[in-house]
Amino acid sequence: MHSSSDGPDLREMWLQQRATGALDRFNDRTPAIYRLPIETPATVAEWVAGWGGNSLFLTGPIGVGKTHAAWQTCRNWLTAFYGPDRSWQGSAKVYTYRSTALFDALRPDGPDEVRRTLIKELQDAELVFIDDIAAAKVTEWTQERLFEIFDERYINRRPVIITSDVLPGDLSPVTGPRVASRLAEMCRGSVVLMDGNDRRKQVAA
Image (cartoon, rainbow, N blue to C red; front, side, top):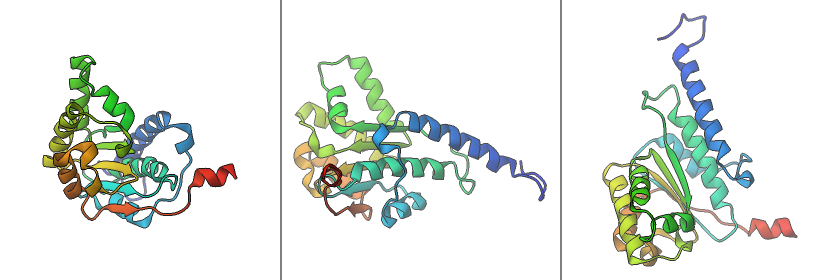
């Protein structure tokens, strides 16, 4: 599938086209405020380049840019997924949810078929990003559904990106101890503390 030495690498061109299409689709559903490219911490760039089965946990005070960094990391991850140095893995499915919206979708009073489809999608996707996981109100039912999602991703080494203003060890009241335990292992070595002032207040000033 390679061309002559003085011509284009057809496989690389094909992967670039796939990457461009995937990034365009991802950008179309990225909130406008997070579409501006930003520089992510070096440890986050290393996580993208590492391609292990570990997940990424971005923590720090409110307003330091965790969510923006996570959206940028998803874009960087997609670019790396289609990189020419990786064997072809098919198309990448990336799901992004604010925790409040996700927990609402998992409630027991919604259509069971819709909820089961969502759980299956989040179990199987190549990457899942859940924003501000400690912000949502939780029930025992929701914790059980979260366990279904995270346990499947844990045993199959499928990564997640989590943002939170609390550390992984403090998530048990929200996610339940079984999910918190799995997250602690999934994110081992990839917990990034983002520090600084509330950027929203700086803009307002």
